Image (spheres, rainbow, N blue to C red):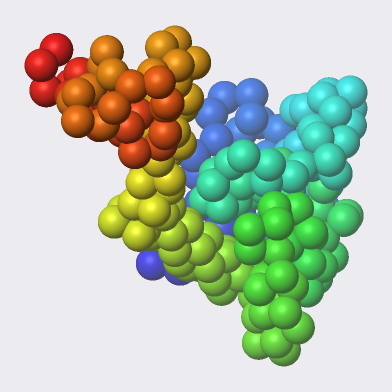
Length: 210
C-alpha cells in the first residue's frame, strides 16, 4: 500500500510514543486552525529539528556532502545515501537534483553509463539505482569472464616460453660445469666440445638415469 504525504504524517503520528507524541500534538496545535494538512516533508523537518541536536545534524549533513561509493556496491552506496539524505534535504530540492547527486558519488565502474542515463527526462531516483546496479553487475560479470579466459588454455604459450627458458638455463649450466658432454651423455657425441645438441642429450640422459 502506498500512502500519500498527508497519510504518512498520520501513520507516523500513530506510532509515536509518550514524549514524541506530546511533541506532535503541540506541533499540530502550533500550525493553527484552518491550516492545510501537514505534508510528510514538513513533519520530518520539524521532528529532526526538535529531537536531533544541531551539532549532530551538521555532522550528518557534512557526511552526506562527502559521501562517495568507494569500495561499496551500488546497493550499499544507495542505502547510505538514503540514510544520510534526510539530513540534507535542502541539497535535494528536486528529483533531478537527487539523481544528479547520487550519480556524482558513484565510482568509475558505472559513472559513464549513469551520467548518460541521468540525461533522460523520465529518469527518477529509483530507476537510477536499478540502472546503476544492472550496469555494475554486467561489468563485474564481464571482468570475471575475462580474467577466467586469461588463465585458460589460451595462456599456454606463456608456460611453454617459461619451460624453454628454464631448459636453456640448464643447458648453459651443463656446459659451464663440465665444458664437455662426454661425461654426461652418450659417448657417440664425442668429447672435448660442448654444443647445444650435446648438452640437451646430456640433460635428457641425466633425467633418464638419475
